[in-house]
Image 1 (cartoon, rainbow, N blue to C red):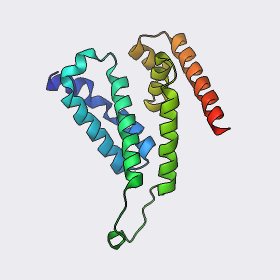
Image 2: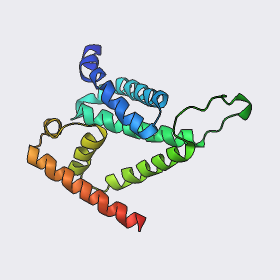
Image 3: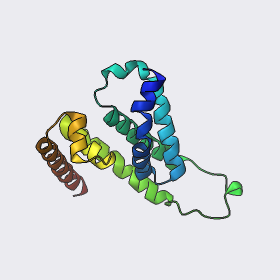
Length: 166
């Protein structure tokens, strides 16, 4: 893949990738770091891109996974109290981040149990914020197939989450 192809296919997706990372991490600086890591990884893997069917789905999945990994790492890091900032920022507290991270890990595990079509549609809709039409174009599905797969994915996730919480 050339630099031109990278700029045309990958670079325009930065905003969507950022939104996915921000939803998982809850902090602008961490979300930006996650997106940067994904863009670097995408460039490093450019020789393998001929095997990728959907660029957007692949990048959104990479971003979500990197964000979850970063959330896990950040929740385990400690700070030296002497170097703590005077002002407390308005970022979510560690308990909220840990809870969000835990929920995302459980959701990811449950999501992997769904059929691939349902997984892809759910990820593109919920994490990538694509419209039904855009999802259909990305995955080569009709509008009704997208709707059915999304409905079934949500139902499956709801049932499995209810079984866990009982």
